[in-house]
Image (cartoon, rainbow, N blue to C red; front, side, top):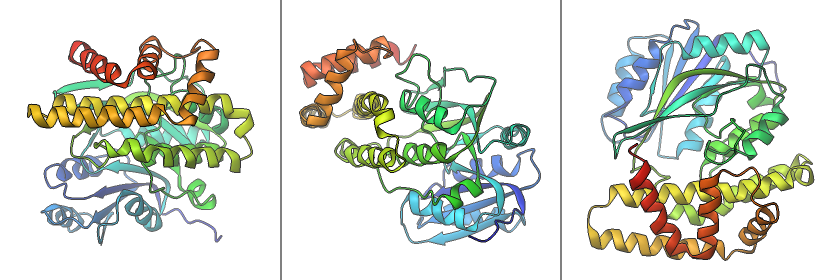
Length: 358
């Protein structure tokens, strides 16, 4: 590979599809970043609303903004297109419907340079629009860097900050500044799988020498019910993501070393996805007949999943260790799911209604 030229400190890659209602906010937030030596790359993934016109308004005003349009190819292909056009020393991927504090790039870049890190992680908020609730990532970061392998193992125990007791590395992408050379030289491309972010982050962590952290809350991710990850079908597709991760461990020669962590990860991955689907049907479906139909379908799919040999193998493994290192709520919920999917769904709905607003 030819030497990689850095024309900017950071390339911000923003992919969008029919994001007319929100796109102006994220582009404005990117423009207003206090880090001056940056470029913004906008990827229009076949939008047919006014998103393109909004993007063009900024391109015509700022020379450091580039815009590329393509037919609708999905988020992974859009991000790869953005990467191919990037000229920054580091890159960061932001979604077209979120918001960002103005100092994010400057703080993350300065930390990356101070520590000579390949990846820098920051804290974030998640805003559940359907119920008007804003949550923050709760697990504090250490004040020292980790090796990539250490961060990877930590992620296997965490996934989305819902499972592990002492773990803090999560599988989201928009909160992470990543050295562009790391991605290019290791051919780390987006996977067309469910929850592609976590697969990408895992690959990047395994190839990184050093991962740093800042405890600032810069990014707000808005959870909308209409996203591609919001249907029950993702539960059927989750096995492909898990197989991709298992193959990654084997390819890197660390599957035996990480097998115990992977089995816990397998359970928490399904736990997180299933809980998200229960949240969706609980708060987004008002029609009683439609609600009951979705609920019935969800129970059926959960029955299929817990009947998988891989699921039972991982469950029995966790059980043999007394579900050690698993938080109380996930531990209880997994036991309920293994006993009865119907009871699991009903109890999950109760938990959401009891605690989500508090």
